[in-house]
Length: 544
Image 1: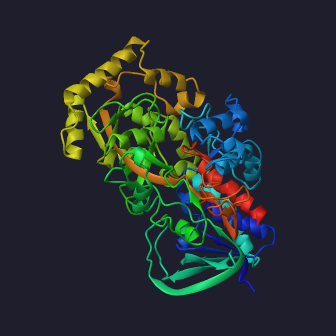
Image 2: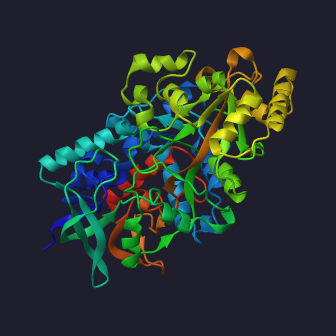
Image 3: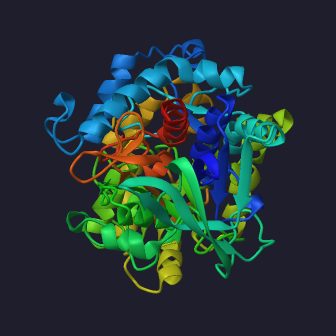
């Protein structure tokens, strides 16, 4: 007799959605996680809570006209799936099918389902990844990541009280149990109790080992962004070289060990070289996990320079194509890059990603939120600008060049060339009809009411005295998401390398490449990671 109906491995968003979908249908679920109870909810807790929605009421109120076919066309342009995927052939066939499912979900039932669960959204839809989204689709959840998690945590508590859900923390699954070729359970190490806070590195000391059986096992173990050795070993050769120093946008527990267990049991994993890391990372002043970094969410006005002080080529402007900018830097061997701007641009355009960096939205604090519409930077942006060594201030380009060189310990930034670059950009602004494509992009962005009001500064010379001082921000690579993962079909069933189903095993969320082993192809549209956890969890709960 089995210990339970279904074992779900991983108590992040995808695991919680799967577990609560199952318990709503009367199934008994055992939810295992290696971390302490404080980390329940996983990476979703730390997220900005952005969701990719299509033709939403929030979009329509802002005059944004969106359609599912337009969203899917944007998806295909970004994903660059291999030929034949649309015919069900080749390595991206499953990812293509999941992409169709996701856009239908985002344009249809997702918002209504979440709204019924009590989820609400900030009314000003953001335009993330301007180079790949035709219209703004990034809907920030009221309450950010914790706001997305809240209804599923509440359902989990209710299911636990009903005796349908058993949550066991400090259980690290080491392997899957196979019986006659089917997955029938897991083996897990019981780890020593830990009082570490959310996201902090916890002990891996083993106190006991257990074997648990079930009718089905669901892997919701995430990717490997916290394991830099794994990131480096799978980084594709054609993308160049990753820098010597990487920052982590996810906790240490995001180590890819669940993928190892799946492979050992005969599961196929695909597209390991496809990743979604960010080039706009800065180190946290008070880190929670190893190498803890945070991403700057920029508007389009900063000049983006490589480590030698050269502008990145168009259209690699801030906020347009993060992966394109990252691969440009890694292919040319740059250890870091720079945003060059001034104080006024920073105050208008900089935001920081994550629930902890947006206390107004996370805490649903209207008074604090109203300060975003006033002049001057607020909250964490102002704090990090005052205290981070990555923020270099200067009265003149020469001052700035000296500070940039002092920070990194070399003379890579030529003060004369930096001054010439700033002067050329400012001359284009003053002309009013400049041919600089970045200025064209800024003018285009300001046609959108949200960007004009709170995200994109009016074009003015960088050296305008009232907007100073000048600012250079050192940026480093921030590891984040795995776009590949366990190969699954459209019911989240795990596949073997020959395409056959591995009975008893399912995979959801980032562990499954957010669907099919790679729903995003080579490049993701922002707001689709949480949505991929929601969709795969919902599908798995109905399929098992």
